[in-house]
Image 1 (cartoon, rainbow, N blue to C red):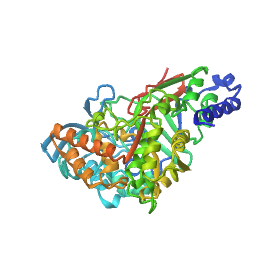
Image 2: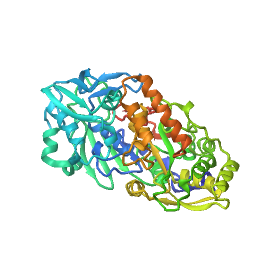
Image 3: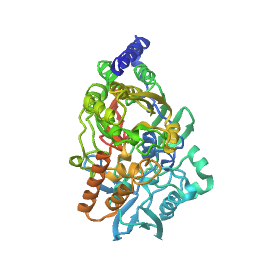
Image 4: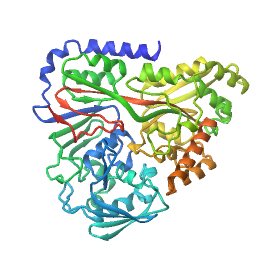
Length: 512
């Protein structure tokens, strides 16, 4: 049974499970108690933005904390948030004036001490931050006065403002020092539009509207009184809970379920392409096995030719998904799609390459995945057609990441959303610049990417990103596959708008 048929059967079971549920749709009473309940499939190990790299963590971070700069998702314009002004003192020194009159949710005043503490802490070895790719451009931060700071860069980094507007929230220094990382994970405090009231492992996070949220915030004032994030791993159960009114909002809804939900009373459905990319990481160094077939370029190229990107995008992902051939998303600065090989779907070519590499009869291997099992199964089906008999190891993200970083995964189906940062450094550098997620360790790539990330000349940046993408493609270090679309399904009493950066902004949501 192929992946699409399996998905349809699964939805049929769900439909039977909730038959008659629409009769109770009038019981969807969360508007009455002003509580938005949203559900997702993954739980962050630590709610701190710097200590998890799941999309669920990014969503929570933007509700709980503020950043220094705000990027308007409609115009991409940078606007003052916790910083009111900024200027480059030199190519490696950025000075920011900070907003006065802001307070953390525990009553502490926001000052330069908090900015200096946050960044000096997260770049230290002591922090054990897992998102160092987002901060490795920062050398240190100096407090100039109570409301002015200087960010010292290790080297020029022209994308600094984009990062300061994205995955770099500001923590309360005094409170964090008092409770430590473990205490902060259990009872986080920020300046953001929502305040956490409880963090319950295995269940979720509850939040209440911050009554002291600063009035000049460029993202506006939160409208819904209470927000609750719940963890529901099974997609059928999430859909059933939405239909019965137990939850108000779900996402990553399988395409066939989304189409069925469109006809369900009192449920709205949105979809659209996002910045998130699905791809296969390939063990080109052979770390996973001494005799790994993937050390041979022809085998890696065969993998690229074997997968029907368009078929998966059009028939399985749907909702605006597009085939992908670059190790970045096309809207990101420096993402040059003209530099890469556009591996067409060509099983005959894949078999020819495998035969030339000595694998005329194919070979057995393992493939690892942590999300969208049906996508992974479709990829496996395509690989089987050319003789690459891949066995699926489906596990939680943290366990997979450990195996991947230890070089034990020959093929890894992954997804990356670049923390919604619209710069190629947020994608290419993560997987090819020598960090913990770089399994290729190509010194030439590291050299080019260092130039691309640090040059203040946009032309130099583009040239080196282009050369990097061309090399990744030519050597088939990765098999980029498709852009994700996201299907949102939610209570029709909820006014909600999704964005391509895959960041649901619940602070913008309201009841109709």
